[in-house]
Amino acid sequence: MWTRLVDYLAHNSHQYLTYLWEHIWISLLALGIALVLGTYLGYLAYQRPKLRQAITGLSGGLRVIPSLGVLFFLIPLIGVGQVPALIALVLLGLPPIILQTLVGLVQVPESLKEVGKGLGMTDRQVLLKVAFPLALPHLLTGLKLALVEIIASASLATYIGAGGLGTLIFTGLGLYRYDLLLLGGGSVALLSLIAMLSLDGLIHHIKQRH
Image (cartoon, rainbow, N blue to C red; front, side):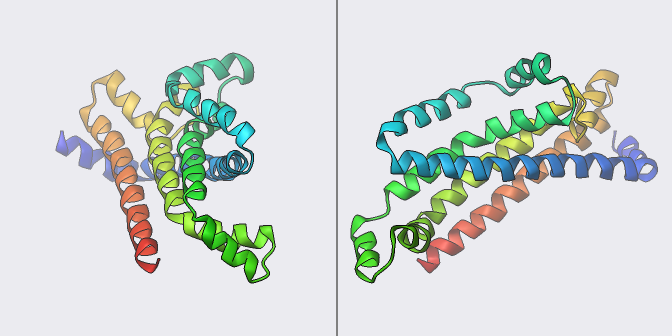
């Protein structure tokens, strides 16, 4: 198996890098969209208690939907390709970002906000200069959980023609090529590990500064 793996990389390195780049690109794009939407929804839930239950309920509902279920639901509506895969990945990445944004903002002490207002800050300045910086470790935790979920689930996007490392995984399964299965699955696991360790290090650094 190892010989076949080395041989594949020797003769198909460009193809492998293409799959790798497709996987990284769609994961980061989905994460970026989920970050914008999730942070806004988390902030909205924080600012408007009447909407909080609806938003957290939506977030909880999205968490229990399996990745394949989201993909197969979107196929009749949008078709196949990167767009439905991107929508599915965004939906999967939203829950941890929404919840951690809400938790982070709720845990900011009211006394610190009052100090900011006492210094002449507007509500917007208190939010941007006091609340969000103090909630940043929680926001990054949500980002980490979302990114790991997205990277893992992006493998399933191959089912609907979105490319990525899932191509190697499913080709390996179909042809009983354990070298391709190991290469694809190992690359996804490594990407997830790198993302998790990088964000863990950033979170630890921010907590030490506080």
